Structures are given as structure tokens and as C-alpha cells.
Length: 443
Image 1: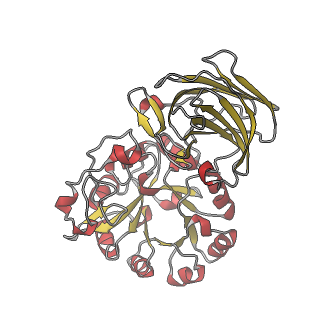
Image 2: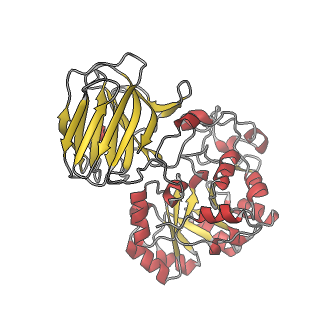
Image 3: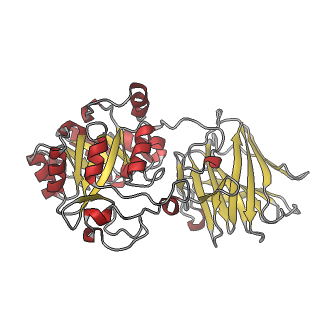
């Protein structure tokens, strides 16, 4: 299990000097600042991450037209801002005039009008206070990045540089900076070059790679891990560090919640897209998925019953769709494998799918290795009025499942089935409809 280092940071406060050598292994790196909870690569997002106790912030650093260094992942500004065009065409002045579409990118919860930072801004505020993991995103960025670090008096012990290019890694090492050779599994070459870290994608990581790396004095960081079942696999393989877009969820330092916080309209740890991520609706303090012509699901990783063997889930659901196939769903699964029902490609998913249809009827299905089988269905339900919520209750015991619509009398499905236990992981979804959820409570 990952050591929740953030808890220690909150207890002790930020130190005047930080050092990667102080971290327990494996540690978690907030990829792009933790881009599933915050607007990626913004000062506001970095501050939020630090306030949450995260100790390592990642930056993607690009060279601008005037030699300045901007922080942004993409080669264009199209996805992140209200403008368009190439990053490299901007000067430091025009860079700071860009506006980030934070609420659009995340689906609510953050204001628009944020600015992408310069690398200088990051170093001024966070240098020697927070561990930094900066990638040379453009081919000519590594030298200027090191110049900026040295100009700001940043301790090499508090920085890990990164690059996919071996030439960049050599440059960093020649100037006395630690570096991760991204994408590489070539342990022998890394050791021969004096490169202290390799950074393969999680899908290529094996225990043999980690064993060989450690024998050669090389450490291993992998990217990008956002699910706990993936985290458990890479930890078992022997990884030293994990890049994550949802670092608090991966670190296991997010706490256990028995109810939703949708009224806050902010993203919580573990709200991950199985197929879609949805968005917040400020008019009624709900979260949901828009109307579509397929089936969607989203993990609610922050939700967990106190007793995963026996619990009851209450929730209000609004289904903006009236055909027999439309509906809102709850998947209770054994772990956090993504559920992608429309593509029938959900290996590893085991649990139960509960659906309330647009006509008011109920379904219960058992899901084994991603394949759903109907266990029970109701007919003749009362269709909810447009724009109204129905109240649902799902009860799980060791041998039985009960699915009840509590806003109408006599609508209950009871199924004797113990195939999948425990089922502590909650996913919320939609089928051919716009669906909203609120007042989700586990007891």
C-alpha cells in the first residue's frame, strides 16, 4: 500500500527544505498537479494540491517564442484555453494573457479565467518548498529549465527532471540534476549513462524490470495510474514512484465517505470516467451525465460503505428519458476496474447493476467479468414526471440483494445471489438518457 505521505505533511507543515530522499517508497507524483481534481498546470490547482498534503507536483515545460518557459502539456493552447494556436508562437507576455476554460474542461467546480503559469512563477512560489518533477516537453527546454532552477537557487535534492529524450537526460546528469528517462525500460543503458530513474508506462512495467533496475542502482517511476487495482499491480511489481492524475485517491489518503458532496460542485478523489465523467448541475446541487445515444458509467471512488459486506445505499435519481431502454444505473463492484458496458470490454468487472428505467421500472443484473446477466425485472412502474427525482434504496447482505423504489408503493426486487462479494465500490451511470444524482448515502 502507498504510504499516505500527505498526512505527514499536513501534520508537520511545509518544511523549509524538501528532499526526494525523505519520501517513503513508493510515492505518488501529482501528474499535471492532479488534473482529475484541479485545472491542470495552474497555480490555483498546484495550491489546492499542496493544501491537500500532496508533496510532489509535476510540470510540463515548453519553450516560448521569446525564450521564456511556459507550463502546459499540449503543443497547442486549443484544449486548455479560450484561444487557439501553437504554444511555441506565444511570448511570455501573451502567455500570461491566455484564459483557461477550467469549468468546461472539468465539468464544473472551478471558475474560468485562470491563467497558465510560467515556469518562473512555479519556482518562485513552490521552489524549495514542494518537490517538483518537471518534464522538458519541447526539445529545447531542458537547458533553460536547468538555468531557471539554478537562477532561483533550487536545491537539486528537491527536483526530479524528466524527458523522453536520452540527450536531455544526459544534459541533466552532466549538470548535476536527477532525471527520469521517460518511456524507457533499458536498465543497462540508464545505469551506464548514470541516469538514476527510468519511467515506463504502467502497461509495460513488470517485476523483472523493477528487479533488474534495483540491482543496477536505478529506480523506477511509472505513468499514469489512476485506479487502485492498477496501483496494487505496480506496487507488487516493485515500483518506486507512481504518476497519477488522481493522486489522493491513489495514495489512499482521501478518507472514506458515506455520502456524496455534490452540493459543493467540486471534484472529489476517485471520480473517474469509466466511459464518461459527467458534470455538475448547480441548479439543483446534483451531478450527472448528459443525454447520449449509448451507455455511460463513472466511478465514485470517494464513496465506500463502512461495512462492505452488509450495507444500504439510498439515492435520488432523475432520468431525462422516457423510452423503455433509457435509465439511470448504479453498479456495485468488487473493485475499481472501469465498467464500459456499451463496448462490452470490461474485463475484471464483477458486481451488480441496478437500473431505474425512464418508464419507472427496475432491473437487477449480475456482472461477471464485464458480462451482465439479468436476475430480476419489474413491470408496470409509475413513470416519473419530467424533471423529477425518484428515490431508490439498494440493500446488500451476505446472501441477498434488494432494490426498492421508495417514492412509490410496491416496487421492490429481491434477489438471492452471493456470486460477487463484497461489492464496496460504487459507479453511477446512464443509459440512453440524461441522468442526475443527488443525496447519495451509504448506511
